[in-house]
Each structure stands twice: as structure tokens, then as C-alpha cells.
Image (cartoon, rainbow, N blue to C red; front, side, top):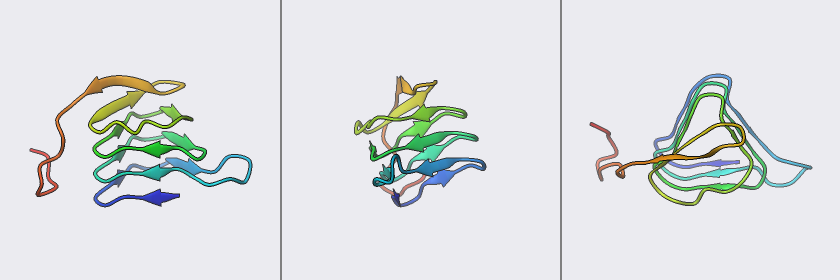
Length: 88
């Protein structure tokens, strides 16, 4: 697994490989909610929110989206994080 800069990973989150392969790659400024699961060789874009309890098993390379559900799907699009890296 690879985690980008300024990511916020809340407790009981699972980042794992599938069948011994590579784990997920998270972009910068991602947030993973409580009990979320990201498994397999998947790519997650920058500024992506993964909701609590979501299960991500495919890539979402789009920037600035929110994912939720089992299996995860895009539920919202939002603005990118400012260059200083802080949300207002």
C-alpha cells in the first residue's frame, strides 16, 4: 500500500492486498472514514473522501469525489483542496 501526503485515516480502517498482490495506492489529501476498507491493487485519486464503512474494491482515479456504500460508488463531487493543503 502507498498513502499520499496529508491523508487522514480514521481508526479501524483496512488497507490490504488481494490474493497476495499489490495493495491500494491513495492520492494526496484523502480521508478514510471509520471502518472503511480499501482492498486490492486499486488507485484512489487526490482529495477523495471514503465514507465510514465503505468497501472499495475498484479504482476511483477521479479527483475530488466522495465514495460511500458496499461496494463503494461515487456519491458526491466536491472542490479540490486549496494549495496550502487545508480545507476551510
